[in-house]
Length: 337
Image 1: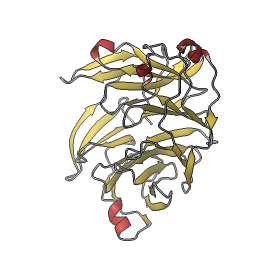
Image 2: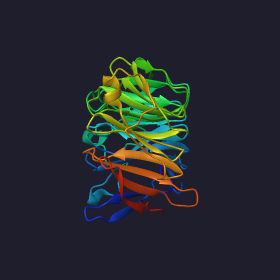
Image 3: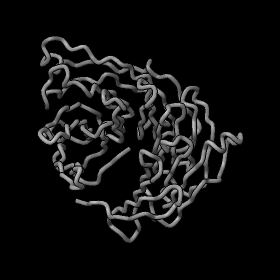
Image 4: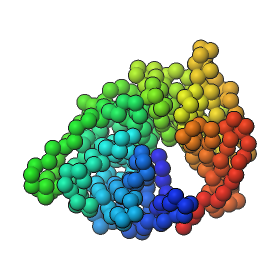
């Protein structure tokens, strides 16, 4: 899940400058966002007071089209907690507090629909199996038709999101106006059960073979993505887990907690040694924040970024860590508008 505490989004240019984009949701906050694989598009979830709906808007970040709404998708009945692109950029998934997961065609423009004219197009799928708020999503980068979703009750579902786009009749305006009932659950492949608190963060490994999850039960868990079997439970955080991140190297997971700590786990070593539960982390950083919200590995796995806040500060701080040396490389205040 990615949320923003303001009504603006920003695009970073190659020279390090930042271009600010006014929220398409009037003065309301952006609830969730995600970039596509090459950074050319940005999906935003938020509330549209004009329609009284929580919608998804896809922006094209090419310089000449930065202000266009490429897609406007009627989203959820309530707050949107997660938005994520599939790794090939052809789908966007969204999840919200209406207990639903929706799958959208992110390439509708290829069908001849102009920017801003997609409003009212139905989702490819609407999954309704969750009976609690859906808080986190992750596509499998190796099997593009697999999506994991985690909810407030501690359950993770694995879905087959399919490959086909909705067929559109020749008269596109009629298709936009049509009401399509496409709520299905026969795409549910398996359930991952074990957490006793809400799933705040989930992510597939880069090879798609494993899933990592972080929960309000203060544990991080590793699952077999093909069978749904829990492989390893990692404990040690003293408060809710806010974020987890798989290293692209493939053997490490980072986690951060509301207790302010950051932990890096060498989960592969524990699995190799036959452990199914451990409190031994490769590294523990206790004094970076009072509360840590987010961790993310760099694409080469050598650096770890963290976002958090000290109790006496009113801005979030982003820190960059050298994973091998576990030294603080630099710290900069996050831009606050």
